[in-house]
Length: 150
Ligand code: DQA
Image 1 (cartoon, helix red, strand yellow):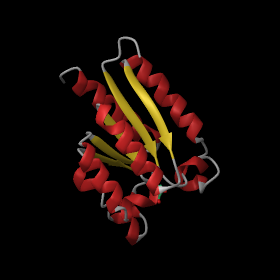
Image 2 (cartoon, helix red, strand yellow):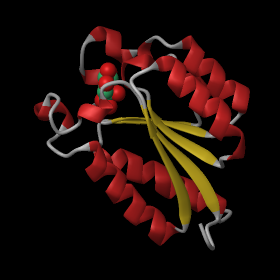
Image 3 (spheres, helix red, strand yellow):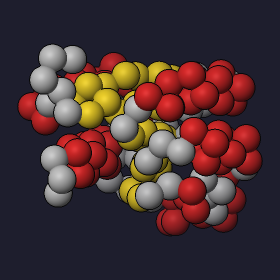
């Protein structure tokens, strides 16, 4: 993107393509397309270049991060249920060394026991849970801030 100061990857994992249809009482009634549009609008203001990726497959997400991660300044990832189990995802974040913020729409700490642990969190620079779409926007603002030396 012309005049952009940083490139940030927006990665969504399994079942996040169903946003708007899936358990709207927990995840809201807006779609992944709505989320991406909101982030694209914000990124334009912040002069950040974004790349969007969603997959239901762990291997595809690992492949994508291997390919795109080395050239990115940051990554915002909602790994969905992979957060609670995927050492492969954790390893690829470490392998490419991209600054990563883990985001969850819901407050995973107030839900079922198995959701309260993230195996990804220890290799991320930050973690946001429970703020819905706004969590992604906060993460994006953080990357804009640090890319300007903040
Ligand atoms: C989620 C929380 C996960 O536990 C769940 O498996 C998801 C969505 C969230 O955004 O709140 O798929 O990552």
